[in-house]
Length: 356
Image (cartoon, rainbow, N blue to C red; front, side, top):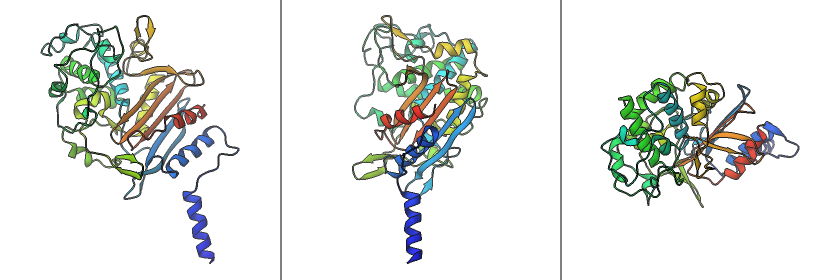
């Protein structure tokens, strides 16, 4: 009887919901994050929080692989990071500006003259800020599973009209970043991912941040790779297979929460990019004199407490992510999940407030 009681007590301790009564700050945030996986709201997640340059919280919750019961490790479990990829591209764009390889306000056609001409010209700045008028996904384009190169993938949308005159509207989409990465690749005269690796990822010691391979089987063999899931009423099921190589700049990279936090540290204390140029990337664009709350690859806004941040929320097949950098508070928040939109952003917003 005693052994059964001890077993049940241990089971409850490991699997039971944590009480939030009397908890504050990071301790409460930790309990709330734990409860999200314990309540089966998400399979697994990795969290890294830096405050003043030091680790305030770094922890894995739930499972990287439900079937094998492999726990999440924030330093080693590799997730799809979805649109946080745009932040990597934004930093890379700043580096290319610094090296004189691209001009933000130059025509896209200066770099990619073979792209079909549209009724209006548009610039790299407009692509990076989602004001170029390029359309978004249609139908199942969100989950394409074709081994496109960046250059070949533009066949998906290259013959479509612009949805508005560039600079006169705002439409968030990932095809903007397909074109942006193509222009950057042509300007650098090396594959986009090679330039990113050499100029950004390696200098920041982001060695667990990887581009998706053109052959998806290459990704499947990576050590530490999380399983990707979708949420259903009956629980979690493995997500459909996709190939994100062609849109790596806008939503294809893979990483750990620890590596993404390093990107946040670079934003707070620039070492590889000139601060003045970085600031331009982190400044909201405007349309008709009104802010879009989006810079060049970065969301630029305020949270519910009125604190200014830059970063990105990401959603992809088998992935959901949060990356927030608070310059005034010297705070970096990196959260990666292995599930297509689990509908937890309100809960995450409440948790993020506690990190201050």
